[in-house]
Amino acid sequence: MKTKKNKQFRNKTSKIYTIPSCDKDIKGIIDINAIRNNINYLKKKTSCDLMPVLKADAYGHGIVEMAKILRKIGIKYIGVATLGEAILLRDSGDKGRILAWLYDIDGDELKNALHMDIDIAIFDEKTIPKFISLIPKNKKINVTMFVDTGINRAGIPYDKSYDAFIEVSKCDKIHIEGMMSHLVCSGIKNSPIVNEQLRKFRDLRKRLAEINIVPPLVHIANTGGCLNYDVSDFTLARPGSGIYGIPGNDEVNKHLKLAMTIKSYIIQLKDVGKGEGIGYDWKYITPRKMRVAVLPIGYADIIPRSSSGKLYVYVNGTKRKVLGTISMDQIIIEANERDKINDDVIIFGNGKNCTQTIFDVAKAGDAFPIEILCHTGYRINREYINK
Image (cartoon, rainbow, N blue to C red):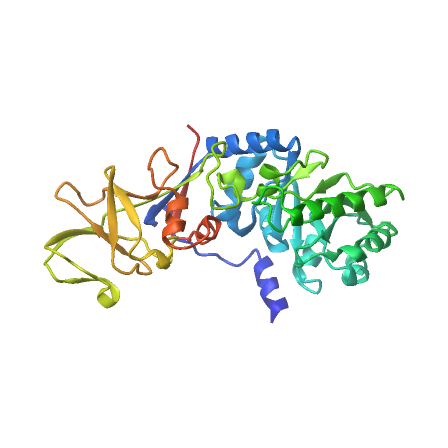
């Protein structure tokens, strides 16, 4: 069943149906200048070249569009989580360097990627013989060795990584292009856990160099690592959320600019009498006769349902309470006599166009800002501005 699904994914004759952008109800406005600012700051902060990570549809910002923007900015390397994401970028026409680090060793995606000039990470030492056996004749594959220095997720266990490097280095069909790991708690400055990870990673690099294994691309720092640790002795850094202005924790960083603004609009205005319930289960009862507005946005799009009763939005520059339980497709908000059908409503902005940001929405929903962005639904019409 899995193989059949992968074959369908690669079938270029299949017709894919999507909602036309003109028919989408919600705007996700993405500021290219903010992204450019964040890229430049992170480069300066790390003294490294960057491999921005575009996993999870570029954290909701659109993987194909973001790849095009980053290439124009001058980014040579792009990272993704899954081989499917890397293949998608290749199919979109991206010809630059792409690294992926999650896949099924027995899946069709790996077999396809080996023909597509994609850098592939080896994350399990037990699969090395199988990986080598799959490499086509007369092909040489760029490989990055993914070492687990302590997070205990996917990755070659640290105590087995030295021998794994040696095993892979003996294969004339592989070029060891990179060495990578991932930090446990990089949002915390001077963490003993992170410091130990960095020590182990550097020690492994040193021991490998002594036997003439010197990968040109060495990287461990995610966004928090870029901001909170000295990684200038490595050749790359791998920021993800940071390129969109989110430092990897719940704190605002004054040097990073938020890239995404989410807007909806009013589709209906109505008057509701005192003592009436609003929405599912009547969690909100009107304390007086009220004018309310209906917006075509809900938890299927980007708003966490857990923010019900705590969330606000902004209409015509004024703060309005979201009333009752957030529905899949709609929210109800306070309205006044000046409001009109089709008026813009900002759910969150960049701090300048609206004081409410993704951090405020995350706090209201007891959620992580990145988690909300990764739930950007397909009904959101992304627009890329460069002002």
